[in-house]
Image (cartoon, rainbow, N blue to C red; front, side, top):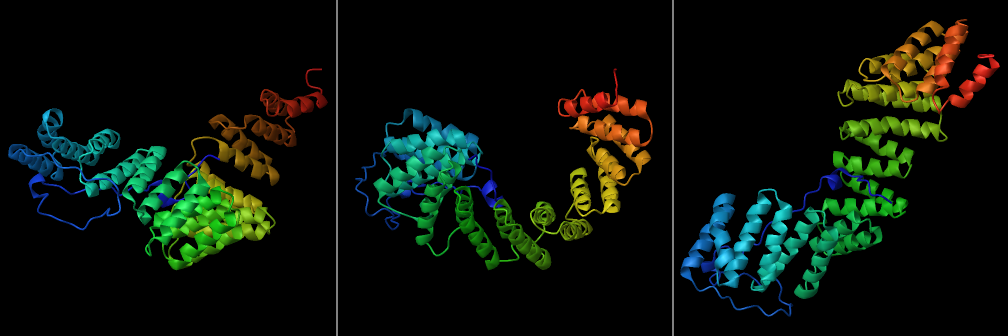
Length: 428
């Protein structure tokens, strides 16, 4: 199943990324003794080989340039250390600095090999070594190299002998992007056992993974539960309604969207439109068409009045279609006319023509059908067939035949059009 982003935060999530600060200044490394972060690792911390005070000073200046965001100066100072230093440690620190300033300049892809070289030098203290390895996994994820991110997390966890909620959260995101939903579920569930403050994005991954792996009931329940914890949160409202709609739980989607409408959480135009659609889908799947249409139009008009639903051809077409479902032709005409004035094609003109045809207002129907066809429509053959029937009702047989001959040119309507022409004895 091809992954389609369901959630606002998932679609635009940015991974937190900060380079390890220790040691920022080489000459201070021996003075600062923070708590050991990886006490259980079997890795033997290497002996640092940086002895040159001149090189220490250059590193400090280069890292100051990194912290100041001065990429040109950082590269000018640090690149010669990478290329010519006899100290592996100095090279590793310089590479880390170059990776940092490159990442901060927005070039994630170029930062990855620099950071990897820093790690592979093998001379970093344990805490720095493992911190950089974890951040490399984050960079891989940011660059959409999800399997590489997973492999790096596994190496970090195995060698560092450490488990964290964030690492399982990142793992869950990677699996989700790779469409390995059971693995994503397991990773996020593990992450949530390791903290009492789970990130919102983890819950989104979990809900989406439930939905994509056929556990729709679990996804829906979780989505609603998360929304009810903070019912005025527009983002959570969007997530809950989106997954309920995906599960075709139209009543459930309507319930949460109407709750958001009442408490002010319903703000996004897409969510307003989804409320309109939910009423229509419910009406078309066993509900009352007239009642569903009335409620859909009530929501639409309210959204327009509040400025949430913007005037557009697509939006007015939706309202016109809702009116047709409710057999309210007068309102349908009004919405279609507003949409036609904004449209770049003739679809809404043809829709108007169809309504007028149903109302037996054939002169108006002919006007809009011709107008729509001239502007361009996707199903031209169908439009010509309605036009032909309109001309027939207006007792203009030559015009009806001409329209039906045009319909016969469209593969979609060729068979029916040719049958009509044959029965009308055209060409005989």
